[in-house]
Length: 413
Image 1 (spheres, rainbow, N blue to C red):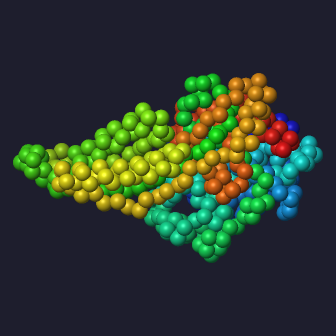
Image 2 (cartoon, one colour):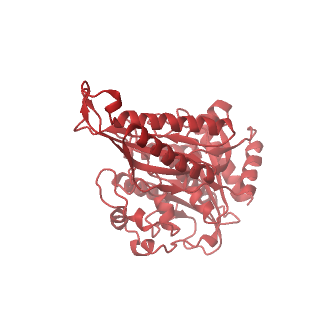
Image 3 (cartoon, rainbow, N blue to C red):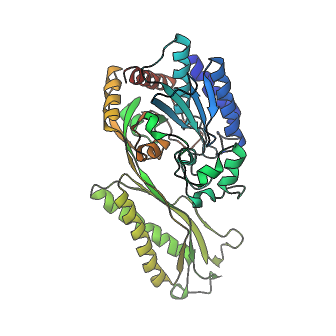
């Protein structure tokens, strides 16, 4: 079987389905994500691979239907951020499907059965909550998350689950829809979403752990609007200056943590005044912004949340404003299985490549499985131009090297 040709067919076919004006958009539980699942199922059936939708509406591929033995599960997600790239998530699903097609075509039955899975709704861009497909499958969705509203339609997540054919009643009760004890290992291939592997010339790398995060989708700073020329500094309640001071103070804390060897990244990804009110000649009385912190250390995340509130209290007093917080969204960090991490490093070296273990700054479905007690590993594939943008660029040679490593991992498991 021509592995390269099949891989290229998968990537180009999904690109055609999900291309938008500037990049690629596969909305979580949206029509394009559904069309992508149908396209992958067509390829699977061509190779006599059994395929079905699980009770959380994810798509599953397997050589033998309803195998009862413990199995290795390979997968990643199918959705993207708005106007993102084609490889984020899809590379891991494609790798699992390609390997199953290879095994089926060549009559190979691995010593441990293998299944591949394409998760829905991993990206938090759509409902403000990550890992929706994998958390639904493992009984980890909270009542608040079921009511999370879609960024565009403002409809709750539970409505999308229902439309996709998921078992919403069991998901709402927190009942696991997958017997995690039967998963011998969960493996996720994913493009690296930062520049480390490009800088260090690493085509493939083993991942040691995944950063957790805390997020506020919308924090409001409330001051008092006024005429820009008529109110002196000492009488102002300027929300923009207050929010800007908060950002500067948090940046100083970030730098201090890094200087002391800590691990954290911080982002204020959304920052805006009210578009119906803002003007050059108006002192802004209302600013909204998001806040995200990521770290491999959950105590560091807790410290950042405390610092955020502490600095807000100080600025409220100094600048005579107030801050309103929406409910916080927490995602725990995850350590991956040490034996799998080391095995991947050994296999990378056997390919004649430099083996280096790196952390994942981005979140992945693998974190959900690791924190559920499933032995979990990840392989990163080098990716030019970062991620969450239309310029994602994965070299096919790097992808095929990762598939070879995964094949050996499975056959020697």
